[in-house]
Every structure is written in structure tokens, then in C-alpha cells.
Length: 263
Image 1 (cartoon, one colour):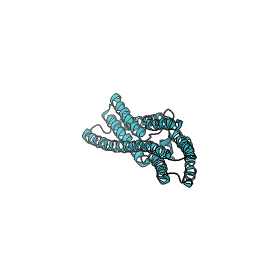
Image 2 (image 1 turned 90 degrees about the vertical axis):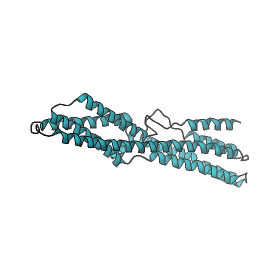
Image 3 (image 1 turned 180 degrees about the vertical axis):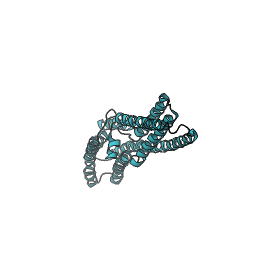
Image 4 (image 1 turned 120 degrees about the vertical axis):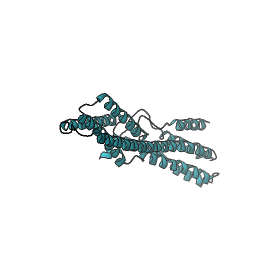
């Protein structure tokens, strides 16, 4: 349930959620510190600063780790799109070697399939809508093999090379789908939120014990943390975030395929 909540909420909702959690943690720590201010008047502030510095060091490690992991996943998704875009022209070249009947039908089927591989960049999709897109693509993909079987029966030139080219397209679909579904483990995301909230809570507590809290500085820090966490979240959502994988390579291939089919 938590996984579904974090992975399928719009980015702006996740932003508000992060801000609410971090600001609430800061104010809670300050409230508790104020309540204990009277009994901790003679407390040594050095110990609190050491703990706060240590927690921010742990937070820095968590941010670096999750940022690097999310960028790796984003690059994997981008490379999967490029791989798919490279596989399609190769298959079209093999299709040009096929004699009629079958050549035009195969090229049209490949073009129809390529068109299903483009995702609009200006909308946020629910899990159901994304599954519907995948099913539509698979339905068009399933029309390729009957055409390949028909061509193979005709003893067309290089049928095995054509089969290998179509296999590359199908493999590219599997790799691209796996890259999209590969997310940061939910335990890592929750731990990042917890460490960030705990660090700000300790900062607020130290301020409460000292009897003063510079909210401008601490809230600015909280907003910076939210910004970094949102970038991590966005890189981990290459399909429906603000930072999205470009489909220009596939669009260029589709234009080439349309021109080839028109000849």
C-alpha cells in the first residue's frame, strides 16, 4: 500500500508530502525542546551539536546513495529507449529484402508497433493507464509473428535474419519495460524520509533547548532537502516525472519508417 502511494502519486503531491513531513518534524523537535528548556538550562550544548552533525552526515550519505541509484535507473531507461530505436531501422532494412506479398504488410505492422512505443510527455498516468498502454503495445506486437511465419513459408530471402531482427525489437521491449519498473526499494525511500525528518527534528530540539530557533535558516534547509529528494524521486520516475526520458530517437525512426513505406 505504501509502495503504491509513493510510486503513483503526482510529483506535486509528493512535494507537499515531503514538505509537510519535514516541517512537522522540525516543529515537533522545537516543541519538545522548549518543554525541556527549563530542566536543561545547564546542559552542555556540545553533545547536541555532535549528534546533529553526525545525523546530517548520515543524511548526506543517504542522499548521495539514493541520488546515484536513481540516476543509474534513469540512464538505464534512457539507454533502453535508444536500444529500441536502434533495433527498428535494422528490422526495416531486413524487411526490404522480403518479396511481396508480405513486405508491405510487415513494414506497416512495424510502423504501427513503433507508434505505440511513444509516450506523451505532458501527462501523469495512473497505474491502470500505464498497463493499458503496455497491453496496446503488446497487441500490436503480437501481429508481427504471423506475418513473419507467412514470409518464412514463402522462402523469402534471409528469413532467419528477419526473425533475428524482430527478436531484437521484442527483446528491446522487455528491457525497456524492466527499466521502467525498476524503482528504488521502498525501504530505502522510507529510510531517506526518516533520516531527513529525524535530522530536522534534532535541529529543532536543539533550538528549543537553546531557547531560540532561526526558522528562516532551518526552513530554508528543509526546502533544500525537499528539493534534492524531489530530484531523486523524479529521476526514479522517467515516464511520468518532470525529468523524462526523451523519445526523439523513436520519433525520428518513425519518420524514416513512414518515408520508407511511402516509397
